Length: 230
Length: 230
Image (cartoon, rainbow over all chains, first blue to last red; front, top):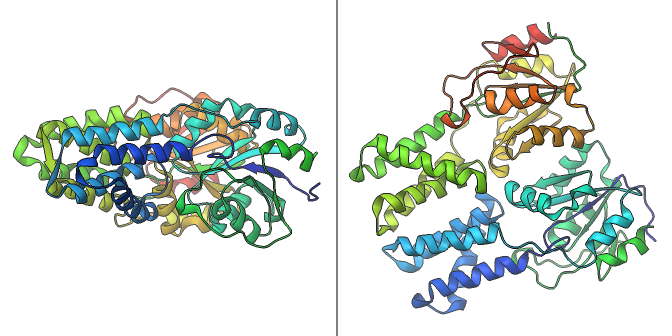
């Protein structure tokens, strides 16, 4: 069992509470299909990935930035211009992505039910504000949570700012999530505790080696949380 | 002097702390210039405004949504397609908008200086998460503020959720801002108090009649705040 004086348990949302990464991969695949006359799937996706890396720093995470990256990629791939059919095709992919079907991960509901009342639970996610909050409402999980925080980057600075806002110390943070770069490493660096639940698909942007710390715990499924915390 | 047991004074940001609306109007104007071969400035801006109204509900506020609206409008205006020069022209307008020069409004710095220490000051803004937080950091005003909240819509529900998160009652909210629809009406509706500082330009999307309430105060300039509050 984990010992600590945690004021909040924060949960990452995408790929920790609900499916997400698959939908981005599907959108990528549909983009490559749409432009298949211009190159191999792999080449097209590589160009898209490059544009994403360029666009995330100025524009942030989420579907709208992904749309800008698709359009940047299409402008480069198609040369002189693109027809409105292609434009509307890309907008359709992005609208479907922003409003995809919603799937809670296995065990989430029971786990939150078991922990709520014993801890203050909150969501700490990154991405687009509107998309994240829409999913939060749609999930029906808001009844278990004190609130949701949408952070721009999940950097150390973002976590410190969140702690200041909530008037808690960084070592009172317990973070549960799938992404080492966003959910584990920065929380450990500021003195918090983290529980890692690996997800089957990891976005290339998030790949990072696990830091060494006795404040990191790894479990296979969110269902193992009550055993660790109650 | 205003009486009340305010836990926080929340400040709207765009057009209350710093200039904003002018930059959106300038972007609109540049869009119309770019497409001037296709119609009158007025017609082109009307189409853009229609697309904005369609896109704000699914995609939220901010420059990226404005880019999608410009592209939707261009696709409609140009018919079969648009060339990459036009695409890059629109992207440039949006990048300039997201990273425009930064101008604090007159009197902001001195007013915050006078109030800080006497009240807990916070920013409650809406718009794109990354853009709003970038401006907040760039402003250098973060030293006066406890934190920033970026709300998706500034609806009554958003303000209630913010109050729950901060563990304050709605009647402990004092909100200062320029937009009746976003800063005044919803705060009054949930039992808070509001100070209105009209701005010279109002976005058509925000126009609304002032509700009647003895919890609304109107001042000409942010410089009049200390007189009302200290």
